[in-house]
Length: 485
Ligand SMILES: [Zn+2]
Image 1 (cartoon, protein in one colour):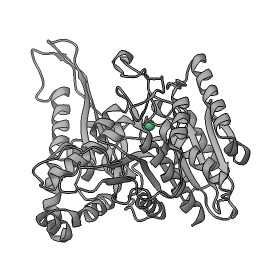
Image 2 (cartoon, rainbow, N blue to C red; image 1 turned 135 degrees about the vertical axis):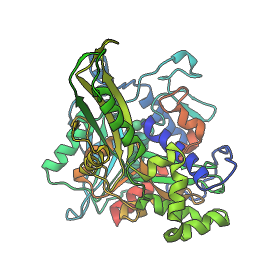
Image 3 (spheres, rainbow, N blue to C red; image 1 turned 180 degrees about the vertical axis):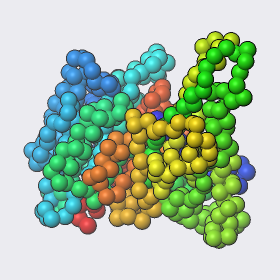
């Protein structure tokens, strides 16, 4: 999920600029005091169980026998480490190694809640640069070290730790809880999340909300806001690429026509670039600004409080940088331009591909209308590529029941954090569940600084033992709230 979480950091960084705050402070050291302790967690024992999971190299993709053995070993480890979970919850294997757990609630009439995490990790490049070997699972200097500690075995193990602890207390959920752990998120998620989502759909199961990795808790990233900011991503951009083609008479370059295939296509692409899709604040971004406003200096507070008047100004500020421009519009990115083979031959055809990331509220059909209208040239052939095309998620505003429950759990475990909704510009397994989930929440309940974000898919991935215990407490609190309400 590197694309996701890095984009998240960049967006917060970009926001500081949008909000007109001059100096970005460097992220402070992550705080260590957790005043509310809803669940007593044996942090060292939990850390040892995460370390054991990290030692199993479940590298994505899972195409060879060695990897099959690794995923089987991880499933066996989970069985031995979480006996209560496996005695009480139903578990089935979906696809090659996907795991779907079901914790039956007392009231079968209530729609369930779906918790997600993924078992696979990205490969390691340059293992010698790690302070502790990437699959050592070493516990040293207060950290659990290794690939997957942050992305995403930390979430997976923390969720099972929470269920095991709740079972030990004799807890019985009122609402049914599902836990879906895919095995190929880092290579698209089709066999894991894709098949699990299809299975839920077949069974007529629709979740009230779902929680997956994504936004996290950062501190000192938005200048002017001293409190840690917990960002729950409630909407996701869509994806589509369009092929533009021009056909003109080819021939010798000594007697060219007035308009060539290349010239016509270049003009079309230039027009698209000059006239991007219209900008607007999505409900999630508007709510984020409103939530942060009371903590910002007067001028920014004034602009956000009077959005009816200052929205054009805010949008102009957002548009100044690519990272924040991506939050307010469907972006236009020409990525391929192909024509011609020889300097003295006119090509008969030219091809360009333009990639669009759809803002919630814009559809693929809207983009096609925009392209055709902007190019204003019927001689340019416009066609959407079907591969990977994906409409944006509904424009959630962060006022759903899932968001509220997560915010309450964040307040219980991290009382000083301010919770805001956000927009995912990358992709997680959660996108596979669009048809079986009412509300989506991407949130990883850990406090991360800028260096931690670099460690994801990078070198020296690790999580503090105390931070991991906080994740367990968060999930236990959330599962209780989610299953009782
Ligand atoms: Zn991930």
